[in-house]
Amino acid sequence: DGGDDDDDEPPPTQREILAMGRAAAESCRQLLAKFPDARADLRALLRTVDAGEAVAIDGVPDERMRGLLSHLFQNLRLRRIAKTGAYVLPKGGAKTTTSMAPIFDMTSEQLEPHARARSPWREPEPEPEKVDADAKAADAVAADDPGGTTILEGKVMTGEEADALLGSEEEDDSDDEKGAAAGGGGGTRRKGELARGPDPTRSA
Image (cartoon, rainbow, N blue to C red; front, side, top):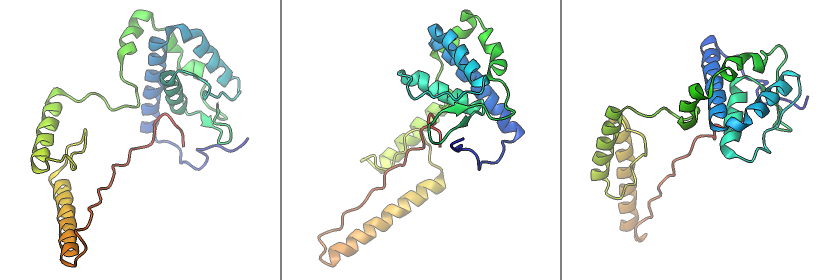
């Protein structure tokens, strides 16, 4: 069958299955809310999957729709064929049209709030108190480092992380001083780049 990306993955736990069900439902709600004209096409796509046919979404032109479809299919626990990138219903898998039937029964008024919702794979909006705490923490770090090289956007560092970061910079400074003393003209400090996480819209 061309091989599947998740052949070697352990089966999900009951908690993970419930979380995936909620994520699939939210993806479907957002698809219907943000692309109301595509309701019939989405239903037909799910019926195609339930019929055992492989469905590829690489050709979907709208990036938001493609991302939501990918998130929907992953959380419906469809298998992704490695060679083609298409999704297929695994043997014994639950019918997607049955799983998403309650979502398709929702009215446009019920779906309307989801038209403005954040993408389901993104973290929820932080509470106002959390935003204030983040801002204060960022200001505190910026005061110690005017160049802004130690600020991690969207993340509050713990005391241990801050000590570790400052400790690494002190080591760099020490190395530079040693280089200058040896006539090396003052070494160039290297800053590591923050690695971004995998694109949640892409499967492994």
